[in-house]
Image (cartoon, rainbow, N blue to C red):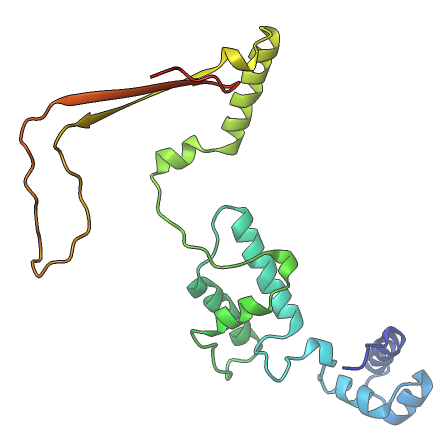
Length: 217
């Protein structure tokens, strides 16, 4: 593809502005005056943009529209509300409809092809979003966590605490003879395995320190 000539584009823009200012004069003399090809100025006068602003033969949206769509995706993603493929498809179709209501909408696979064309620097890709309880998500608010760790750091420094002063204690329970759910091959729709009824309980604990020390069993 030939490189875009910024000087030529500026001359074309100036010629087009002058064409409107002179109340639509003849194009040929105006093209000679500004030193631009007649065919290019003719196309601009009749509303045909440059190649960079027109849709490519294998692209439904032009470069400006695709960049706007990428920016929209990034804005939603930064707001912790990443769009679905259906939402991106709807946004693209809205752009198409505003430009030309007679054009066909994008197909259901267009979004996936579009995503492959997005420059790697944007790092946009499909991921599986799993639902999570609202309270758990609120507890993961980065501002709360940052404040908590800042206060913790202040406490550590003011009390001159060392790694060996930090311990983690964990506990879990077991029941002897009790099984757990597992996948099996069967002709039945449901299947249960018997357990031993009331079983003896065992508690397991472990304790470690931040410097690597661990409590013996």
